[in-house]
Structure formats: structure tokens, C-alpha cells
Image 1 (cartoon, helix red, strand yellow):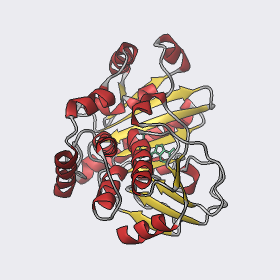
Image 2 (spheres, helix red, strand yellow):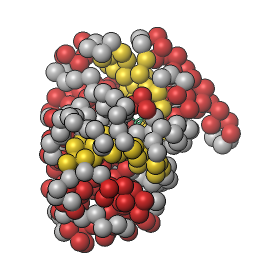
Image 3 (cartoon, rainbow, N blue to C red):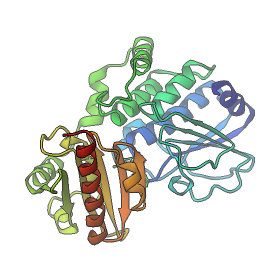
Image 4 (cartoon, rainbow, N blue to C red):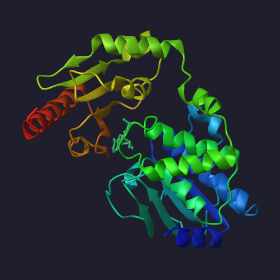
Length: 316
Ligand code: AMP
């Protein structure tokens, strides 16, 4: 499959690379690293990484404007379904390739490279570059490492397999980047976010069977001078709390008139529950968008039922 993708990349003069809405480090790093690798290998090609920007991830590199894409190849990283591709239109591309590590949702590209056993989209790009004539340099390697480290929550999840560590070892050895430089970019945050985390820890509620949830209203967002993405970005920091197996942040997004929900689990499968609430994601790391707090609480109830089933099945 890598050779097939490389052949397509070689064929096209214009290549557009997109990823999912609500950008996260793996989505952003996978598209920017792939763009930079293709440009380094084929300096005469026009390669555009497109989508909504984020100041937080500026250190990875700039994005491009989507223009003149007649006869172009579109590569979509880290996105399982059409509706979550961060691009104004999927029409007009000559060919489309998907490179993803989410569980399969739908086929909408000509070529689809999907492996949901892999830690991150960046891990797939690492393997693609290593196994083809695509070039790499220290900045590309750093970005790929950032995406992998972020999506695996610093090698915490079971989808970090021996091959993951082999790839990381290969890139570290070959490009000799300094880990402290990379981690500084990934983990530095303003004090107001730490204070918000304090609020979240203090105000987390727990359901009967152990679903922790934190409601963040627009008032709280304004009080802590953060934005509606901040609380969701902190969801991984609530791992390993003895009393809860599943936890969620529920955040009011006034601008988009929706409630954003980020869900994580230390066991029960949650993505099928999220799918019933206009969401989805990985088996133990999912998200959803719902219309109001009432529907959000219906989701919490459904998660509570899922945890109850899990406890019964596993005789816990
Ligand atoms: P987040 O909690 O936003 O970091 O998202 C965790 C995972 O769930 C990521 O793989 C997202 O792509 C996915 N996800 C988040 N929100 C949604 C949604 N509304 N629909 C489908 N997948 C989502």
C-alpha cells in the first residue's frame, strides 16, 4: 500500500493535504509533516496543507490557502468520515487518498490506508516515509514525534506496540532531535489553564457507576479567560482517578451554538455510545457535539449504563 501511495504522490503536480475539524496535534502534525516530506522529495510540486489554523500548534509550521486545485490529489490524514474533513469541498479532486488510524466509519476515498491498531496518524506517516523514497529531515521527524506522543498520551495507551517504539527509536537515532525541545512545545501552557484544571477537579461530579463529568458553562470560560477548546484539551489529565472509569468534559461553545464533549475511558468501549450523540472516535477516546446540556446529560446517562455493563461483565 505504501508503494501505491508513493506512486500517486509522484504522479501529481498539485497535492492538497487535509485533516479533521477540531484540529489536534496528531491531525496537524501528520498533514504538515507529510506536506514537508513531499516538498523535500519533490521541490517542484505544489503541496498545500489546508484547514483551520490554531495558534497553539504554530510551532509545527504554517498552513496554506486552498486555491487552484484542478487535477490535484487530495490526501486526508487522521479522519474516518467525510463530514469531519476540514475542507470547504471534497469535489473537484482528481483522486483522494485517506491515511487514518480511527476505526473504519465509511469509504469515501479511492485509496484508503487505515490501521486502527496504530497509535496515531503520525505513526503511519513515519512508516510510510521509512518504507518509500519520501525524504525526511529533523523538523519533519520532530513533528511526527509530537503527533505520536500527543495521541498516545506519551506512550500510555495499548496501541503503543513494539513497532511504535522501533519507529520512534529509528527517527530519534537518525535525526537526533532533543526531547526536551519537543516536550516544551507540547506541554507548555498558560497559568489560566492550570487554574481552569483546578476548577474542573473541584467541580467534577460522579454518576452512580463511576462516570466523572465536568460542565463548563460560558460564564466559567469567561471567568478563567480561556476558550471553549481549553477544557477538552485537559481531559487526558483526569486519567487514573480510582473512583472513575469513564470521564467527560462538557463545554458550552456559544459561538458555534453547540456543546462540545470530550470523553475518555480506562476500560469500557465508548465510541459507539458517542456515535449515537453525533460523535465518534476511538474505543477509549471519543468526542461528541450536542445541541444543549440536557442532551449532554443523556449522553452521560448512556455512558453510566455502559460502565454498569462493563462492571457486571468483568465482575468488578
Ligand atoms: P477529542 O476529545 O476532541 O480530543 O476527540 C477524541 C477523538 O474523538 C478524536 O479521535 C476525534 O477525532 C474524535 N471526535 C471528537 N469529536 C468528534 C465528533 N463530533 N464526531 C466524531 N468523532 C469525534
